[in-house]
Length: 263
Ligand SMILES: Nc1ncnc2c1ncn2[C@@H]1O[C@H](COP(=O)(O)OP(=O)(O)OP(=O)(O)O)[C@@H](O)[C@H]1O
Ligand SMILES: [Mg+2]
Image (tube, rainbow, N blue to C red; front, side, top):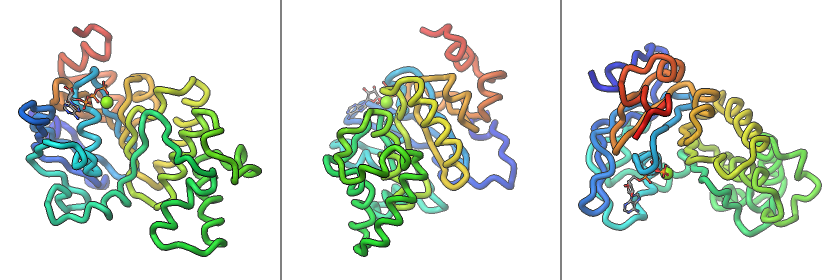
C-alpha cells in the first residue's frame, strides 16, 4: 500500500496541495522519487528524515523555488487547489503570493522593521500610509512581536535578535496574505525560548493558514504537527497522522529512524 493510500483522511478534511508521483532531478541525479502525499488545509504538516533525503527539495517545489536552480527537471504533478502548479502556463507570481516561505536563517531585508512588513503590500499596490500602518500592526501582532518592536518601527530590522528576526520574517510572510506557509527548519538557529515562541505562534497561525514545516527536531514535529511525512533517499517512506507515525509506525525504516536506530 502506498503512503497516500494508507492515510485515512476523513472527507471533511480538505487537501490544499496534492503531489502525485513527483520526481525531481538535479542534472542526472534523482533527488525525489514518486512522492505522493497531501497537505491538509489549516493543519501543520511536518517533513522529517535524515540529511540529504530531499525535504528542502520537496518543500521548494510547492512555490516553485526550484525554478531558480539550473538543470532541475521535474515530473509528476503538484495540485494546488486543484490546479497543477507545474503546468508551464501556471502563474508563478500569484503562486508565490499564495504560498509564502520562511527559511532556516532569518533573512530580514536590510531596512526598517516597518518597511520589512510594508514591502510586499507596497509592491502589490498599497500606497496609503494609513492602510500600510494597519497592515504593519496587524502582521506584527500576528507574528507576536508587536509589543517588542512597536516603539522602534523605524529602527533597522538587522538590530533584532535572531528569534525576533524570525518572527519578523513570519510577520512579513503574512503581510501578503498567503494561504500556505512553507518553513524549512525555521527554528534550527534559535535557542529553546525563541523556539517555543515560534512553536506557539505556529499553533495559533494554523487556525487561518496551512503550514508545511521541515524539521530535524522530532520532538518538535511530534509537538506541533498534525501530519508527518518521513522521507528517506528521496522517497516518502511513510505519511500519517503525527501520533500514529510516532507511536505506531507502519514501516520498519520509520521506526528505526524515530527510535534513533538508524544508519
Ligand atoms: N541545488 C542543488 N544541486 C544539486 N544537487 C542538489 C541541490 N540541492 C540539493 N541537492 C541534492 O539533492 C538531495 C536532497 O537534498 P535536500 O537539500 O533536499 O535534502 P534535505 O533533506 O533538505 O537535507 P538537510 O536535512 O541536510 O537540509 C541531496 O543529495 C543534495 O545533495
Ligand atoms: Mg534541507
